[in-house]
Amino acid sequence: MLVRKAIRDNICSNQAVDRIKGVNRNGTAVKVIFDDGYDLTFESCWLRDHCRCHVCYDTRTNLRTAHILDIPEVDIVEAVCKDRKLIIKWSDSHVSSYNGDFLSEFNYDTWSKSRRSAPKLWRGDDILNKVAKVPVKKFLNTTDGASAVFQSILDYGVAFIEDVEPSLAATEVVCKALGGVQHTLFGGMWEISPEPGNNDTAYMSVGLPQHTDLSSFTEPAGLQVFHCIRHDGSGGESVISDGFYAAMKLKEENPKDFAFLTTFKAEADYQFDGHYFRHAAPMIELDQYNDVRLVRFNTHDRSSMAFESGEQCKNYYRAIRNFAKHIENKENLWTFKLKPGLIMVFDNFRAFHGRTQFTGMRVIVGSYVSRTDWLDKARSFKLIQ
Image (cartoon, rainbow, N blue to C red; front, side):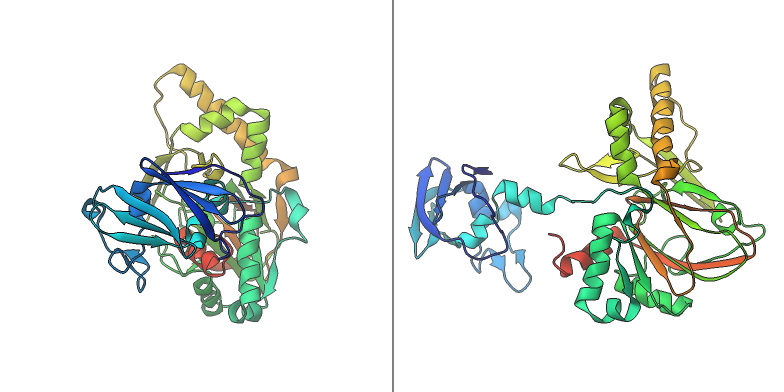
């Protein structure tokens, strides 16, 4: 596809400043030489697929117009630099033109770096004065306010929005601005308070250990939004922790356990109100760059499983115990009280959450926001690629 032959410093792929000064063709490959001396090599199949003429690409939709099977496997007849652009003539008489700023975006080092996450790991209340706490009017009405919230979620996995009217309706406005309300078996917006006879621990007054919500789904919820609009009693503190930090500590101290949890598909299931969810996936999921993408841990939702060997069974229990020790380490937990008017938003792919036992009537309203939808918002503010 594309091979990078030289390194230049401080490449910025979103600046249209790269101009082509020369072209060398070698078989099916074309080397493009830029003004500052660095070069990139592109294969002919890539170049033809990325032709941006009006026949091959629709600028109204920003989409290709041809199916991959309709793109001909043709040869390059001529490749030249003309007016600082790469011009290619193909064996089927088609002509393609490429700007330097477009081609420079596909330097693999820069391209891959722009797509990698850069989370800032934390433990305990280290981030007390680092996470965003933005007034709701600023969040809803200004780019700076919204950007601050999404950047905080990207950096730390959590953000706060304050001065919100303590109601379900006002909370829903915030949820929609975060990317939209995700509907699940619990509905869209939900209200959590003690309900005698409800068999979900969220609706009880017991304390909850650190966990991921919807661990039995094929994809857990993206964001969670919590707003405590009423509490007439004691206890009920929110407790959160950085799951990525716990995963990195496991990798540092127990690398075999980390490796096991990134490959072994642990099963989780959840039954509630006539629903039955089940899914098997690694508790620590890595992306294509071997960075942690998702931590999925809920000690109560773990399924009863059969193992192919005694060794696998022992490895599983050793690994999840060691992971849980980091997750529940008191020094890694941030405990605080949510009060009416203050919304907590956190990344359910990263942050674990729980609560302390409480008395009285405690009412939490909120919703989930899908990962696709909140990342769409982050991209719209140009915070990620």
